[in-house]
Image (cartoon, rainbow, N blue to C red; front, side, top):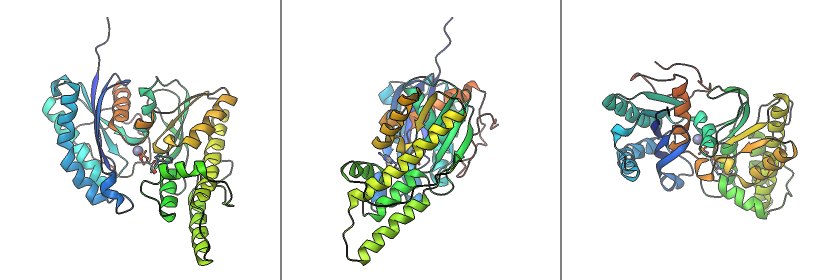
Length: 343
Ligand code: KG4
Ligand code: ZN
């Protein structure tokens, strides 16, 4: 007999996107609604936490109504409720968590707490079922991690950034160069037309799986400052190319090392920076040369969205991970709570 389909209502509000999605069986997107606050935060050059949480409050019920309407579904058609409980901005997370708890209370359906990074990794599952064991390279605005996964919903972090996350470094470099927020996609675009002429330092090129991007970011700050003092123009495109080449080089090198040393042939890339064209090209080449199966999420699933949370929630549910109404949002939660029961 065919197993019953599981429909997950997923909620993601960890930063500046209010998003809800309905995902069937962890693989199929029924519908997703995202309200982005990028234009609101743009004028401040970054996300303002207080404004972000207020915007979530204004949007969240509208997003839910729109999602159900677009999906032609009723709340009673939902089997489980998945929500990002952390990490992220506490005021923003709380809105999503309270909303999820309320829906769970009203419907009596299980509440599934999802770690934001587990969501980013499972964005790949919406394209093609993950194959294990795998190495996940997580590159976002808040994380730069190498993760070993033996099986579904089992996360062993083998390396991480010691300071800035790679997306954060992109955004800061963009800001120094006078580019808009979020800067990552703009730096990516300009890097395509620039030349690698600036002698920037390589980010932490050692034997560990850890990363460090604050050195190269500071080098860009000093370079811009010195050129201005000398009355020289900064060649913005060339700075972008020089910065991006070094970052992509080190991300590729350490990922390759992890795949070799863990004897793994599956690589998934996750997080906002997984949209980066140069990183995609470099990792694709490395994967081809080393017979690695590689997966990137569709670009729309790279940055924050609830579809990825719905995909992850299904596998968390299969593992018996549920929460009760005491579930709390967590701003910092460095562990991948694969097996912990939140009850
Ligand atoms: O995963 P995400 O939406 O948020 C976090 O969970 O942190 O990632 C957002 C980050 C931002 O820093 C943004 O600049 C970066 O991803 N990003 C990119 C690109 N697209 C988004 N960075 C480099 N190249 C891109 N094409
Ligand atoms: Zn994210």
